[in-house]
Length: 157
Image (tube, rainbow, N blue to C red; front, side, top):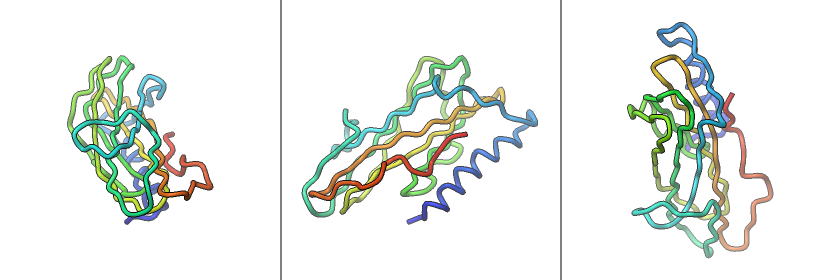
């Protein structure tokens, strides 16, 4: 399991590599036009509708569903997904995320204690523009509540 500092370093590396695109520099596109929603549940066949999940004591496999929505005018074609807990989920995923569309990505995560699951999504267009957003979900196991904010070190520029 990667450490928080190694995951933050991976995010910085992914963002830093944008500065060396063929167009010589990348332009950041406002994140408010690029939204990321994280939901968490137990069903691997469909995304949950909640960001918070409470489970009884013990070990559980939860399903995190990330939904990226593009409300920019830019078409994004390359995607990097990071999890603070798991590190790089996907690097250079080729998928055309056109303006006005959404894309889902799901992954399983084993939990045995309460935790916040932080994720970041970086989307890049062929025109050198990129967008980034982060989101999080919370799993409460038993009566152990989180003592700190689930939003942690994955921050977009």
